[in-house]
Image 1 (cartoon, rainbow, N blue to C red):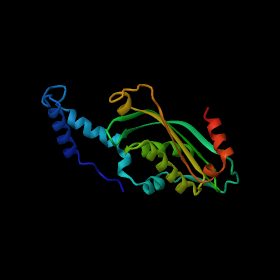
Image 2: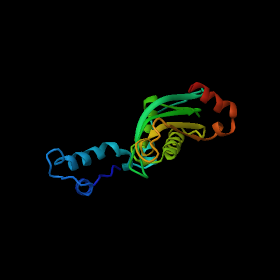
Image 3: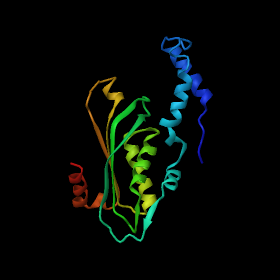
Image 4: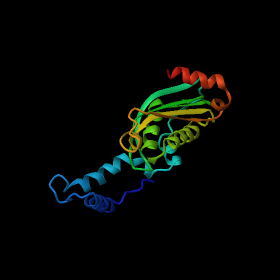
Length: 192
């Protein structure tokens, strides 16, 4: 069930933030900013409205009676997210999702939609991969899932250490991908 955000509360918080950093929220360029930010949050945090189970139900479009148990891998799915520690943008993010079918294959566009919806939350990169893996497992009814996420974090590139170009890679490895080194190596080779 879709949960609504409290636009008035968001607008008040943004107005307070503008004042706290020393600007005038009544200045022409800022007058409508609280409303714009509240509407933007509807889009960029859409995934916060849904649980993993709800996302799985939304994108549960599989084709049954598939006899293949060969690796399926979708790579370079572009997403963005916001770090829950600094509310800073995680950008240049790519998700690579692989699984072994268990009599069901998911529509490929649904994999990208799942990645997008999971990323649209206050997140940790590690949790993005884990959430995507959990949802793919539920939808495809397979334990054999691997999700690799790579991206840059503005909390590291634009502030603090300011290490521009530093990329973080994480992997959620489930089922055969955890126990079969050759299978895992095949995925990594296909990503090169």
